[in-house]
Length: 88
Image (cartoon, rainbow, N blue to C red; front, top):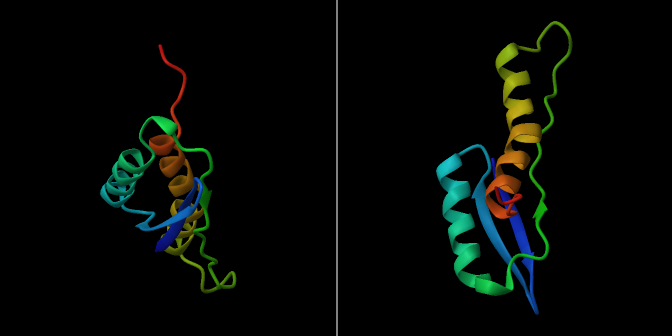
């Protein structure tokens, strides 16, 4: 599941990321860090998402977990590596 996430600077940059692959997320975040430097990231758009098309008889746990990972866990992981949290 690939996704484009963007940074808004004087221009918009697009990155193709496999949002369910942590290494892909971290590689993209490193590229972002190098490009924005001390200016920092000022906008992050995560446009990934999937829709499980199944009815009660055909839906599987695997399909629902895939849906949850892509639509719920992946945005959190992308945000976690791209947006600095509070410093301890």
